[in-house]
Amino acid sequence: MELRKLSVDDIEPIKNVIFDAFTGEPWNDEWKSPEQFHRYISGLISNANSLSFGLFEDERLVGAAVGRIKYWYTGDEFWIDDLCIVSDCQGKGYGSCFLGLIEDYLHENGITKIVLLTEREYPAYRFYAANGFTEKKNRVVYEKNVR
Image (cartoon, rainbow, N blue to C red; front, side, top):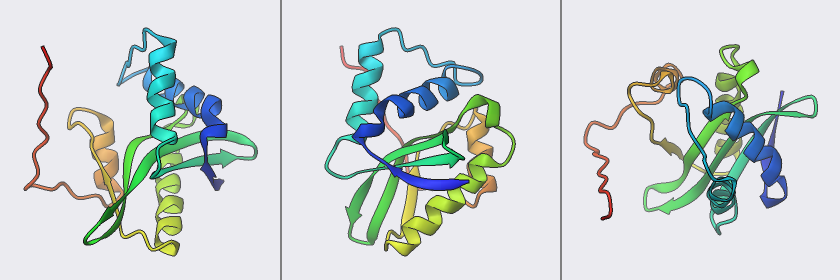
């Protein structure tokens, strides 16, 4: 397997991987508007601090990690917005391999931390814990619906 950086030029394959991974169990994301989904992915991969990776098996994109670099006082951080593996490759070690390759890249490029959000009810919570991530007990995620 091979790690490659992705760019705006890779938007369609990124969309395909993310759509495949997140519209099935257990996430069941319902993107009712293709335009909204396109804006979501485009916004993630086209901002100034964007950093996205693909996991390739031969020439097939089987995983995507889209996020951004946050230049923070404690060091540069990679904030992951979405990380996924296509459905037919899940549960086979691809995700752990992908994270390891990403960590190697980040280390080689002076990025000191990976930060992400996930929900406790989903398998991703256990996946990240099993891959060495720790939950920040002093952090709270707030949200508020706008009228």
